Each structure stands twice: as structure tokens, then as C-alpha cells.
Length: 214
Image (cartoon, rainbow, N blue to C red; front, side):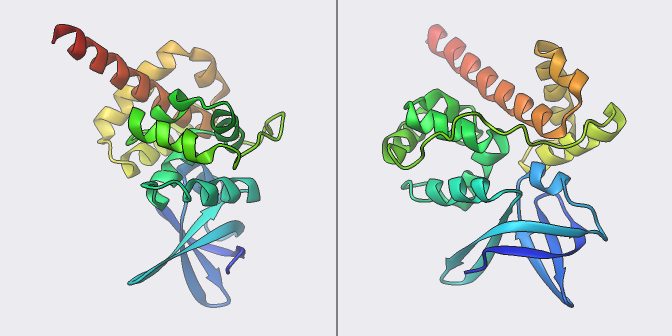
């Protein structure tokens, strides 16, 4: 098992990075938050999980060992593959996931794009007892950049998850209008999570409106 990679960051894409290990480039899939902490040409370290399929070997990278642990446990849920597990970590901090699983809070998981009530219910059911909160969540994060720096990063992260640049920009503005303190802090990871949560809540509101008309 490859537990971690440490080497020069050769390339950073929208959903993956390439780490140069003495001349060998290893491609690692990661969340936008994890990728935002890497710098091309500088040394980077990622904790990794290797997913073995019949026709492929895929590495997924994480900023912390705790993220990697939560990712691996999420994969134990039937119907949750590596891409969906990574999406959960793109929206929520590991400690938030632990608390939600421990308290059977399925609504936390429905804020993740691609997870509906049925899948969320299965997640909390199958994770019962597998993830225990550590207590106080760490305050890890990235530096606070000006809007000129954070906005392109957040938009790029959202387009990598399937949104168009136009929809991503509009969603970011609407989400931050509801929570201006997040914009003031300018934390890329926090702004991304706030926007994705807003989208999940907005989707739920739209569904309720359709249901009431029916």
C-alpha cells in the first residue's frame, strides 16, 4: 500500500496533481481544497489511498491522514465509490462527517451534490459505530487571499465538479450573500463548502416547491 507521496509538484489540474518522485510522475486525484495547498515546483506531501480495479490503479490524495481515514471508511458504504467519497470531503471537514455519522444526521450528507435522502440514509446506517468524533475539529485551512486570488480557485473547483463557469460564479455570489462573513475571511476551502451547501439547500427548496405544486 502507498501510504503517502512526497516530491516536487510537477502539475496541478482541476481535480488531480502530478507529483514527481525522482523522475517518475504520479497522478493523484484530490479535492479542490487539497489541491489549493500545493504549489507547482515546490515540494508537496499527500497521504494516499490506492483504489484497485480490474482495469486500473487510481491514487487519491489527502492533506491529512484523518481525511484519508474518513475517505476509506466512506468507501465501505454500499453504493459509495471513490468519486462520491471525495465529493463528501470536498463539502465537509472530516470532523463534520464523523459527527454526522455518529449522530445519524443524514441531512448533512444530502448537501453533497449527487447524494439524495436514500443514499444519505444508507450512509449514516452503515457508518454507525465506524466513525467517532475526535472532539474539537481542527482549524486547518489555507491562507486568506483577496477575492482576486480566491474567486478563480473556487470557480475552477466548481467547474471540475460539473458546473459551468457562469453557474459557478452566480452560485458563489448568492451563497456569499447569505453568509457575507465567509467572503470577508476569504478562505478558499470555506467559500467552496459554503457554496456547495447553498446549492444543496437550494435544490432541496426547489424540490419542495415542485412537490407542493403537485
